Amino acid sequence: MALNFPGATSGPQAIAAQDATAAWVDFGAQLYIAGAAHVMLWTALDIGNSTGILVRALLSHAAAGDEYVAPILAGAAGVVAVQDHYYQLTDDVDQNIVLEWELGGAVPYIQFQIMATVLGVAPVASIAASVTTGRY
Image 1 (cartoon, rainbow, N blue to C red):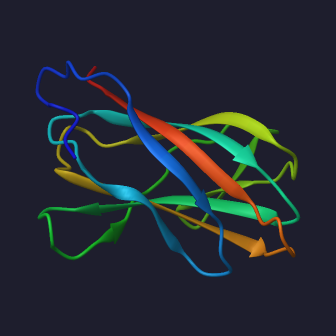
Image 2: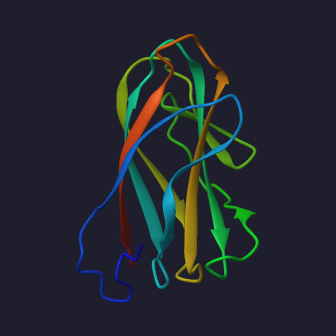
């Protein structure tokens, strides 16, 4: 799916709810975001009985190419802990939170992934989101 860059006009791209697993799992489809300076993931987390929800972005230079973990340049104190290139949602409660990755306009494709550090019994954590992109 494309977010129509350059000159984004399509608005936010919805990502359907995805249950967390004990290993990284794709969250939505790979998105074409060429020209975006940054991407924001507007998440709605239903924590269920899981804890330590992790979210990361994988970058690729081709639609079916190798994927690389996206770096995170900053984190908001008290909201997320920035760890080894992923966001960890440390407040194990239902929440809406925005996560951001700086891309510099040089990334054509992005794929989001999620996992739970402790996967609870049903119901497990589920996360839905919308994606927006921007240019500076």
